[in-house]
Image (cartoon, rainbow, N blue to C red; front, side, top):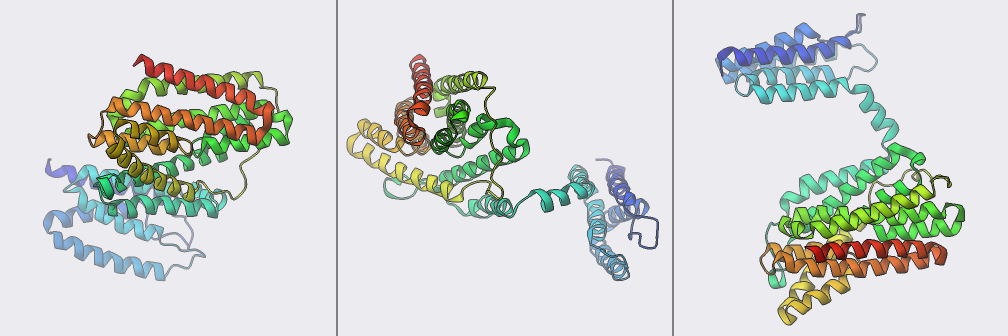
Length: 409
């Protein structure tokens, strides 16, 4: 790196941040403390101090803090804030950083400037769009990812060394993140997308629950039955997509073995849903997402994690006692409640070398089969015969394509 590169980057950072602040500076007696020239000089000053002696950067930061404090105390505007003052201190630090790590300093400078320029949009989003429940969910997701995950042990524990807490917690985070994404898309697109898209997105939270909800809607509003059927079938697309995602996190070789069956089943579900949507395009529209609804269910995500841990333990015990037959029994029973938990459990066994990836395919497909039976029962109970018949036919076709894909591997 040439000596002048850091100074050039520092000047660029100062000009960029200063230009954004200059646009908000104002021209009256209540104008803010710094504009483009001040930011540029401060950034270069930080670079000069860092080049001469690192302790000069500390002294410069203290001196600038005092000056900024005096300017803030003398501010007579109605809402002085601290954005410009904090940005000025950051500009000095970035100028110093540019002499040693110019690329990092430039990237951080651009990121800070983008935040400054997004003031109206961010304020409008936080105050007018983001609800209290959604904010709480965001905090939970951030805490689960940034605080809890680093503390989770990354090793097998428990009887038979069957439980992998870090993998389980990553799956919990993934389920919450997918649910949040589906919620955001629903709020963004609104009711004009109708029931089919709502079913597709809700399937990422629970396809079985989605089928039950759509059955109830079909029973209460028969005019919406065709779209409710489409939503129920499309929710199974999420089942295949989510299974691929959790297998990718757990054990990529198992995902490669199951790629063809999952792709065949997912395409079949999408095709059946699209056909039903096309045939019901003149039906009644769907409803908006419920006001104040949470982005995802923390309870459901934790329950899935607990189920995964239980299935891992039962599968390992049955394998130790019954051999390969024990895996099939465990998969069949677990599949009635959830298809992702046994998928993660058997992929984990394959990752540990307890079974081969191709041996994990059959219990996972068996769990998918028994889970389809559960969905069929829910369809009958939720929507009655008129709703359940087309849904079960669609689910049967999807399951047949999935097994056909497995037999071709």
